[in-house]
Length: 294
Image (cartoon, rainbow, N blue to C red; front, top):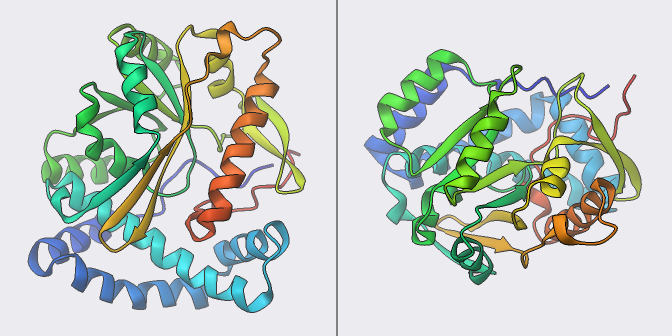
């Protein structure tokens, strides 16, 4: 059974420290302090280090020294993405510039006036991308589990003010399905992270880096059934001040003869493998992703 529980391990004090440091000293000083924080997790967080090291060593087949080096880089990059998210949401996004491979695909998605589904994963930093993509001239909705502590959410709302993207929280009463349909009907884009699921969710199995892994059924079911275009999208940090966004060409799975949830999943996984070979240090699933259900 997957060991991801859909809950953040952060606390309100940690976020307050991040915000204070960013506002007082700037991101460069925060990145320097982050070196020590990343070192702590590198040496003392074995429960998350083991699966990430195994990902590098046994999935991507890197050597031991490179896998160890990437493990530290992974913690540092993850911390940077958290800091960047706070900085961008605090209206300081001018700190970053970006390249966009495939931007024309998302402009085309908006121009078709059907809305669209963007399938991503817990890699890179899509929340920062959601703030930076104002030039698409439509609202970005990010579907996510409501795993954040209520006090953290209240504090971040006070700090960041109005977001440039909307969050649709996954609810047990399935009210998120109505909100997704409502957003698509308004020609908005809905981004779903299609690599994690909670216990009890329906799943699909697909070979991923040489071994079968489980993925949530929901994003692929919606991509097949909803009559809107789909694109696979990712946002990766390439330097302290630079991001690179990627979008595939539009896919119309609902109109493809013989398309199934499994065939969509296979295309998604192939794209995700390609991206992770380019940016292996930005794999942010800190549990045994390949562990089978009980």
